[in-house]
Length: 244
Image (cartoon, rainbow, N blue to C red; front, side, top):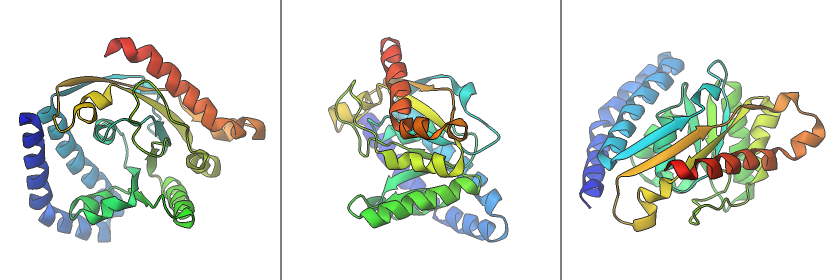
C-alpha cells in the first residue's frame, strides 16, 4: 500500500501545482503550438517517470529502433493496465495523442493536460461520436501528431489472451498512409490491476515491432491489416513471456 499512497499523493500534488503551468502552456500555445506540444510532452513525461519510479516499475524495451522518428505513426498495442499509457508515453519521440475514454474529461487538471497532449476522447456508447474520434485522429496525424490506440477497446482482464481488435482504429493509417507500429506489452497487469489496490514492484517488457507501411499495401492486404498487426503483437507477446 505504501507505493499506492506515494503515487496517489504525487499525482494529486502534481495536478494542483501544475495549474499555473497549464496557464503558461496555454499562452505559449497561442504563439507557437509546436513549442507548446513539445513542452507539455516534456513536463508530463517527467511526471510519468516519477510515477514509474515510485511504483517500482522497471521496463525492458526491445525494438525501439523500429519506431520512425521522422514522421507520425499509429501505435497499436495490447492493453492490460492503466500503466500501459505511462510506460509507453515516456518513450515517444514526438508529440503523441492517446485515444482515451470520454469519462476522463471529468477529472480536472488531468483532462487539461490530456488535451494539451492531443488526446482524443472516445464515447463508446455513441457510434457517431466514435466515427468523429477517428476523423479527429486522422487530422492529428496529418498535422504531424502520432496517435496511440489500444484496439481491444478496454483493459483486457485475462492474462496471456488478446481480445479481438476493433478494425476502425486502422482507418487512421489507411487514410493517412502513416506507418503502424505494433507494441506488445508483457506483465503490465502485475503492477496494479492483478491485485488491487496494491501497487507492486514489477518488471515489464515492451517490444516495438517493425513498422507496417499501409501505403505499400494492396486492397486485399489492407482488409487483413487488423489481423496482421494482432498476429505480430501476439507473436512478440508469447516470445517475451519468459523475460518477465
